[in-house]
Length: 160
Ligand code: SF4
Ligand code: SF4
Image 1: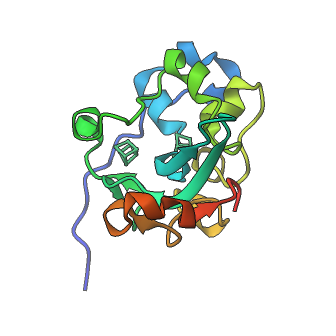
Image 2: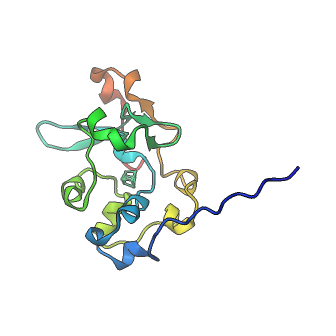
């Protein structure tokens, strides 16, 4: 048995250690997207206490999330399909810092910190965010399986 030659795939155009060398607003669109570690924590439904404003994560995943891969089911059309979805940009990040998980790569870089060893940009392997137990893969319930009034039963710690 033999594999036919495959065409070489061009590597995405990423500047070396761009997340340490450039400000978030200076990243190219490809670098911006590459910064996401694919943990899916930001796609979990969060509950806000009306009195205190405190946020609580749940293990319930946005209805558009592919819970097997931790990827959005329709990334280009996510805003049309899920109006509550926040498209992260250097501008929206400022507000989103209040609810993004502490491990989020955008938050780490905005805080002047480096990425963790399990981040795919450091490890070179998109699986490490899962094998390190950081992502929510295998630990989510799809939104369509949970009634609105039962969301509270699924509250988790952010770093759980
Ligand atoms: S929390 Fe941050 S790093 Fe994780 S999937 Fe969301 S945007 Fe990407
Ligand atoms: S629409 Fe996509 S990116 Fe937005 S929260 Fe849902 S799964 Fe995540």
